[in-house]
Amino acid sequence: MPTFLYTGIDSNGYACIGTRKAVSEDSLSAYLESVQISQFNIFETMTDTSRGMYSLVNHAELALFCKQFSILYSSRMPSIEVVQLMAFQSTNKTLRAALNEIYDIMEEGHGFSETISMYSHIFPAKIIYMTMIGEQSGTLGEIFDKLSCYYEKQAGLRERLYSALAPQVILNVVMAAIMAFLMFFVMPRLRGILYDIGHELSGTTEFIFGFGNAIGMIVLIFAMIFVVSIVLLRLYFRSSRSKNSTWLASFKLNAPFINYAYKRNLTAQIANALSILLGSGAGLINAMEVVTPLIENESVQESFTQARENIRDGSDIGEALEQVGIFPTLFIKMAVTGDRTARLAEMMEKAGEVADEEADAAIERMTVIIEPTLIVFLGIVACVVLLSVMLPIIDIMAVIG
Image 1 (cartoon, one colour):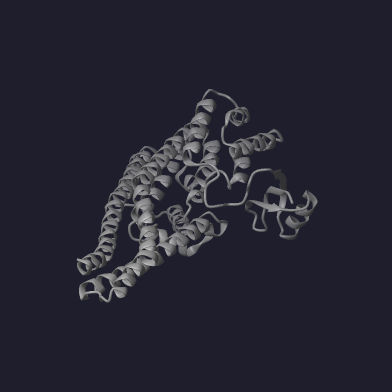
Image 2 (cartoon, one colour):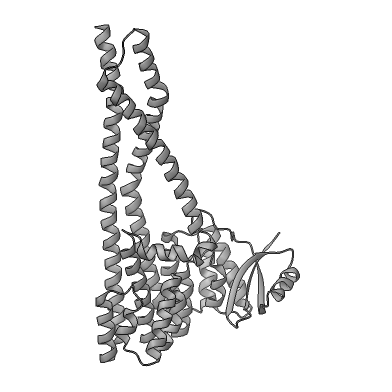
């Protein structure tokens, strides 16, 4: 059954997009009419719309795509021609297929931002919304240049995390496998040998033996729970349900260790988008209206919308932004100063840079903490394993001697 992409206007008058499998376009048209979606456009897609554990296009590939798009678009090449050229030279099959389809849809008269928004299963929300902002402000080339820097940072950060944590994780997995082998094969045989020669384990050896078995069983259980949890969480985060999850939005804002970096990341996104729109001549209220869909956290989005309405009603910008609950004091002071001196766009750009740096520093600190923690845990497990094996062997050697 083919998969179709569609755009339209829902019953509340808002633009909507989606994907759906259907027997034919006529069948999908009947369905869209039944759910009160009007003015719809339907396009068949050959790209994989199902979300798995991994992104169809990784951050390094997105960084290269954004960089190349920025260079080509800044050379005065029309966006449709840029898409065609990017599709021709892309090495990622999924990205190439999507760009070819985007080109075909744009040939029918649809805009780039409208078309790329249908491919939310391939392009992150940040790219989709920033593309909309770029077209509205006339700064698409500049925006894609900034996006390339952002995804280069993300790719570098992931590489550092993997290089730091992967060896430790692998060592812990190997240790768990060794412990399982010792528990189920080596330990019972050692105990059996001691009983066969008529020697009972000493109190210390019996304690270490039992303690090792208990620790081993706990480690194995936690290892299985950890692996299953990671798989399930990854699948959930990649699912469409997680986008509208209230508890997940609240968890990201309040969870220890990650809430600081997450809030700074949101702050940077909002500040960068506002600086671009304000710099292109948009008013503060209009800029905030455009930026609101860019906010990926539903709770923060609602608070930001309320702040926008408060500013519209005449409230002080500092008080309104403070009620959002995620912005640091420096960001609010810079916003107030920029508003008073008519340099809000410049201040937002600087505030975004500061928030980006703070988020990166927070993630680096998390990495520094996690790596030695895994090493210490590995050392404790190794000591328990060695004692559990060596003490019975010593007892056997003493009896034989």
